[in-house]
Amino acid sequence: MLNMESTKRGIKAVTPLMLGIIPFGLISGITAANTGLSLGMALLMSIGIFAGASQLAVLQLVRDNAHMIVIIYTALIINVRMMLYSLSISPYLQEINNKWKAVLAYSMTDQSYAISTVHFLNNPDEDKKGFFFGASISLWVIWQINTVIGYLMGSVIPQELGLEFGIPLTFIAVLLKGIAGWPGIITILTSGTIAVLASKLPMNMGLILAAIVGIGVGTICEKLMFRKKGEN
Amino acid sequence: MSDFKLILTILIIGLGTFLFRFSFIYLYDKFKLPKWVHQSLRYVPAAVLSALIFPAIIINDGQIWASYSNPKLMASIAAVIVAWKTKKLFLTIAVGLIIYWLIIFT
Image 1 (cartoon, each protein chain N blue to C red):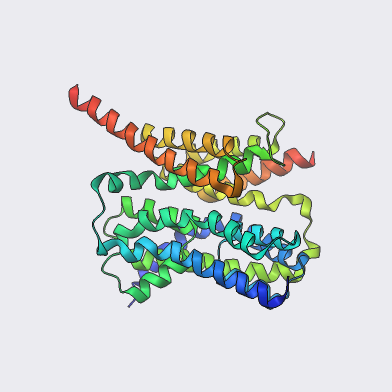
Image 2: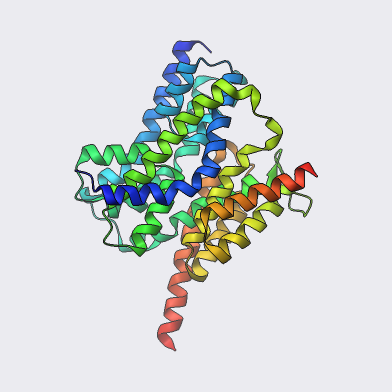
């Protein structure tokens, strides 16, 4: 049922990103161990939630003895950006049955989403299900393996390496690969600036605010530039 | 926090996160989105990724650190140049990490 050629292309497309994902998976495992979670609980979290930034936030809040409601609320606000991904990738994932839609949705990450949408835009004939599944599932497997390795070997890995920096680097790599034209650049600068200035807003609200304003500004820019071209 | 409460917390976050991911992938053909929403979708990756990248690089311990002495900022600028010129994912991440380590360890 799966187009293996497309799946392989999806796996191949995200493989270079492992350089940034593996260290982050290790950190997630190390942090779970340092927070006092059992290995089973650490795996329940990395399989059940499967969203790195929110997992680290949960662990931090567990250490701080935060209330359950605060932990849930904080994690969900960090992950609500996934709704934008879901909306953005949905046109490519039709004529797929609901079971597969659920599998693809569950395994979607920032990286597999971004790589896949850029690929689909440039390769409209790609088998979307196969490619997206390949991109997502390979990152899923790598994430789980490295969570366990990090959990078991955490004390061997020096904290000073700043391994968490690998993730913004994967985002930079993916972002610049897919960027197209001035509206895209203006979107990046608008959204980035707002995210920094709004970082003090409670519960990570700055992220969503920045993303939505960025999308709006990019769309308006495209409209204005298109209209100008039409007049000339 | 008790194990039971932690499991419950994880399961609720997991379910909520899944519903965010599944939402529009599931709903897409159930109703028609306005045309302007469709047009704006291509800016989602740029906008969301930027909103994740900039604070991760520039905010340090809750403070804005936009100076050449910020190792993450310098390494990111190098990564941006490599990404821009080569479009190579692995090379971009590798250069970013190496420059970062060179700055913090020397």
